[in-house]
Image (cartoon, rainbow over all chains, first blue to last red; front, side, top):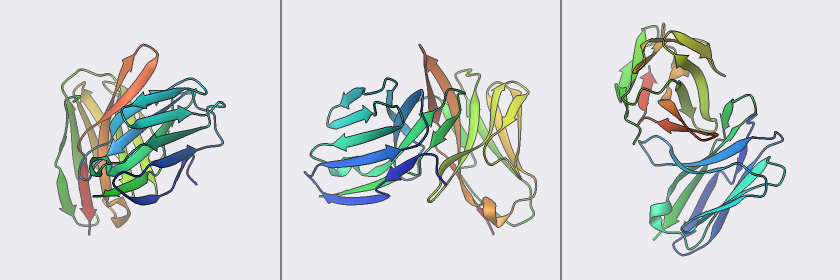
Length: 110
Length: 114
């Protein structure tokens, strides 16, 4: 059982559409990170959120940390083919353990 | 770019053979990590190191050993590879900024055990 559940597992959309992916847990995290991974490469950090209710924006990407610091969402506006990749969330516990979700594989078709 | 390289990038080996994967960093970070990534499981921690000769087990450490004789190198060894160890292996370093830790990953090693 994954400590962090990501949904959906797979998402295929057309260019220009909006989408939201989710990262949920029953555990509380001191911080949560989102990574993006392209085929044949390692994950690359997109953002870190640390405060419950925090919202961070990175161009067309909006990240939100749940009020209780157990969940997070990533919203992409007007998706582009360059957004295609595996999106991973990772939660850091108070004991400094970091756990990763299994990821959402996003495909944006031109 | 956190100056992390992994070698080899690809390896095919047979069941029962020993395999060593190398992670090299150029920025003198104290913490280094080895993960494996499998479909449906995400990244799972195998072992980590918090300094030269200081290592500890992660979530999936059975069948793996590590060594860190120099700050810049963290080696992962499969003493007797099994097919269940077919995976993509990632090394990471930890960089701390303020009260936030971030892990930066290497490019990965794809290992196939036949």
